[in-house]
Length: 464
Image (cartoon, rainbow, N blue to C red; front, side, top):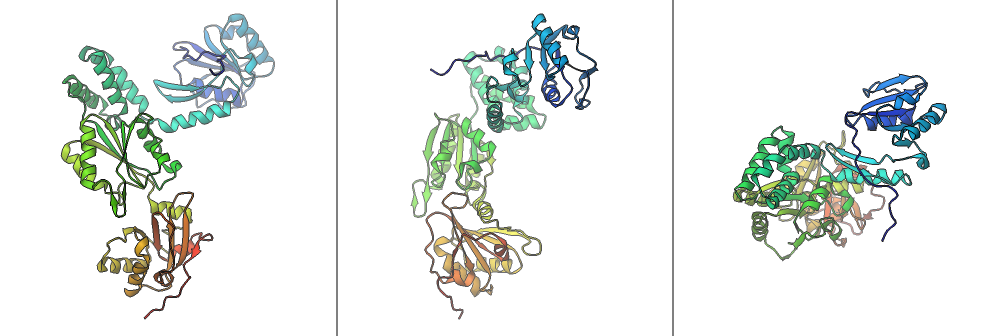
């Protein structure tokens, strides 16, 4: 068993009462910024003021503190270490008003926690004054997990309590509230001012004992590093009942989901497809029809070579709700790894992503025209045919000196970089590292940081 708490966590009611803050400096201002988030009347008392409280809508009294200032006070904060502060401490003890003395934990009746505020939802993180910096860091992580619209959804839930109680039994009411507070469609409706209509429609569905058909979230997992996952992706992974993930999504990212969530790998590697795309479409539709929240986790961004279009079409046809959560695509991760400005004034006016796998002659002609006009081209799925692609560029009149940069396993700790020219890539002498690779072609490559790159100039390529 862990150490016992010295404080009892609770929420203290201050509605219709006064919060008194003694002090006129920055410490008092910080407490005032917190106090004005409540419905209490906030009063600041100090013999002299150094900080500006004018933007907070508080009552400012510039004089020495007196014991009568605590009449009707719910809480008192002392942020003055002089005579006013000493008088306030004595008066608070005598009047038995809960007291917080800033930066003096031993004098405090209560501590001010780090607060995550989504009114009416409040989450407080306290370290009993021992580690306020740690409490702030924990609060920041919780902030990242919660939607900024969660408070509005909570108020919506509160407004429906009587109607839900009269309409549904306890078990179904619980399922209704779970669906209400976790549904992205409800969040979007709230943001659009249509939250009540959407909530009533959801309630009607539960009342008909149909329940919702579930939802599928197509989530971009990024290039592989878990800290490149978006905040929204992290939040939805924690809500998902089932995680359907691709082969390239690292286990550490999959494990960011709920511990009790079902995990289904539908991995597809080159020449080894355990699930066909049609089977994946059928699977996510079936899971959603079972009323489950499905996280369809894809490497990179689902809308860039992620075949999300086919899955969205299947979901639309089946009438399943869905949402798309973007991720960091491999080309952008590769650009970041090498500080390559894929768009650069007077060098590259645009950026094009394409797949080299299965490219025909007309596509290479188009790419050549693009890089010759000053654009940067990022080619996916071209590692095994990189030399042939480079030869095709040259065949279609691209300069043999055009810069080329290749990043294998972009965005990951084990990334490997290669740099050279089209001619050097066409020589085909490089054996690339395992893993997916991005091939950059264009003048912008020369402006990146490729100091750690392996040179492609291992063999000469003679232009016929």
